Length: 226
Image (cartoon, rainbow, N blue to C red):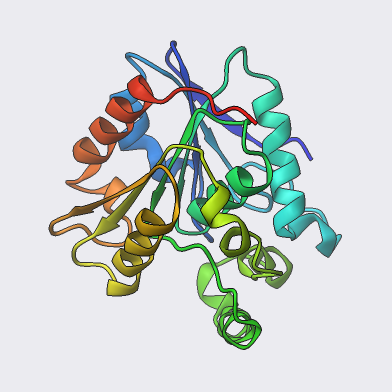
């Protein structure tokens, strides 16, 4: 599926992924601050914003979304940094877990690595199905939020992709906890907690902080090797 992409600026590439029920525009404030030094691609996930919303539910699995992201990356002249918020952050982690050389690094905001325990994973999936209507997208699209397996948790200790985990100090504490876990388990991950930041802190007064962290990280990140 060819996803809708909003492109700005020039320089080393940064790809931005939004959360469930949002769109590429959620990154406007950050993208505008990055565009003077980066080629910034804000992506509408399948069924969101200007991207296609096919009837086939198989278009809205995690693996299908990752394959769509591969198409976006294939059109670049360089290896990007991938940045994701919430669902987009999980997709960035899953992409790094399954495609370790496809990005120079990832930045994830207020997200987690999923669940190794099948019962906890199904609990998450049950809540996601129950609350799908709150996100303003068709039920088949909300299936993007489902945890199909534990691929990130299973590979976390082998994930050498440089990673920044951003957590909002005023968001749910489990995101900071997930960041602490990733910092402890991944070979090259660092947790940054932004005081006063909420779940969508990249949209508000923290946009400058988020953009600067991404820019500094992108300047230092180097491609991983097998």
